[in-house]
Image: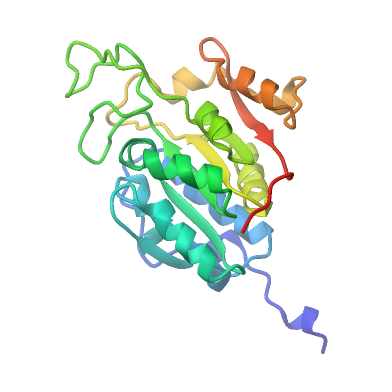
Length: 264
């Protein structure tokens, strides 16, 4: 019997971890977990070929719910660990996961430098624009005026732009997804894994418990996939221009990608 015929074809269910997710009902992170399970199964990957690494936060519990090698590290430190793992084993598919607070706040320095180093890692960020695990404070991506427990009169801080930051820092594949569009999300995760270089996938993952502003109802009429309009993802300038759009229209999809840089 040939080797091909003896190989098992895994499904998304085969990547279900032994621990059930403890996220709130309706949390967008369920969509990211489901999308990741579908993506790796469609790519033909096996659990022993994957390493998921996270920091701290609601979304950072993902490695425990996903069947693969996993590592739960310190707050904001998933990318240094992911970098070390990739350098130690180039054959391993390394996926760093976390939230906007973990990745763009305390981990912001690592985000910048991992982007410019262009290591062959997918960084999957579940962006809910709030600190959820600590029950609702503004995060680095919260909008001006947002009222939370830490900002009862509204936030006065400007939010960072993860897409623009990644592009200017040197990331070679930069995209945004939305858990309300699973078909697109699965495609983006697959493309991010297959990209040779540092890939950022920022995913709108609504927090149904503590963020009453950036809800599914907020995103649904605004989200516009870049594949539905004229956009050249190889054009750095176009990527930056689309990244700065925020209002009645918010773009998802691949903003920028290039294979012109070396990677490890």
